[in-house]
Image (tube, rainbow, N blue to C red; front, top):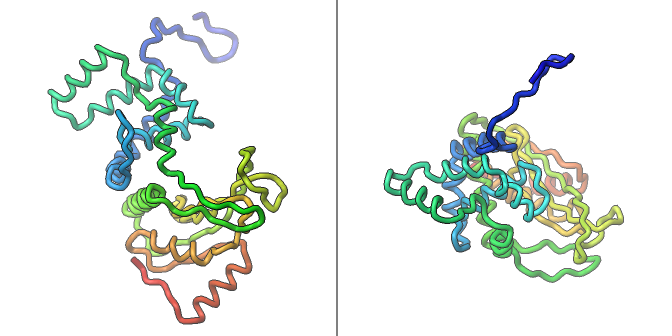
Length: 271
């Protein structure tokens, strides 16, 4: 098109086939492959949803989050992106022999093939992580850790270990902090700030810039509640080779509890 006054110009593309507005997402698929994230998901998670593997559903949810999706229904936007779906289809062929590739390619030609799971399939998948627990207004109750949630915890530990292996250090600074997440859900409880929220307690591995551990909590659970237990559990998730641990925490009462724990002669053994 004719050049305008400012130093840029428009170019008309003759075809829309294969175009994508999500061209940055495949870089994260490369990263996941390098860190063997898919293998870790397949090893630890075993939730059966017809037509989809654990790796496909978990990776789809990661991509949806990276793309700025707010709801499971936003998966329809990923499926509607023709160019991105073609990339996913090519990735699905990775590692297959020629016969296997041809069978999948024939299937794509004969029938409609979803490149990402449908919202209904993902909702069924996520339901496997849920377990009802008693909730009492005014009481600090932490939901139980289900078997599936424990599997996610192990997957995250594998991810942290894979990153650490590429740049090993013998020390870790752990930053523990609770985060209020405001919600309008009917069964959510009120936080100390007066609005309904959830308040997960997160433990960050500062040197790697990664979350080492997270514990989901209702909004009425105090930030310092049972932090020593969470801290000790987070230590068990550190990658091999970490010998020194430093802690940052905004909860003064918890720091006193930790010092008392150390004074009693109880220590931490590096993995």
